[in-house]
Image (cartoon, rainbow, N blue to C red; front, side, top):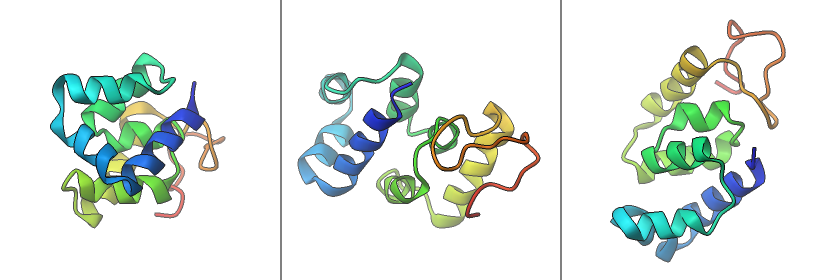
Length: 111
């Protein structure tokens, strides 16, 4: 898993207008942008799809995700629910500071 690469990408996406433009353009432009990072296929698919829940389960920091959500047009309440749904759908957070050690019944960290 390349958690560092995902978080580095999200940091750039949240702060750099050119990265935002390339991501928003989609298609080959987005594919080239994502290809510059060392993602697994699962990570690349989650980022490409804007799957907040999956990214959370993969270990992405909520501070980074909470800025990604508005870029996707996701309101705050839906962002919080997307993280909860990610845990229900994909299982416990696998890595990072929110990693869950006792199962999916745990409250989503910080939510």
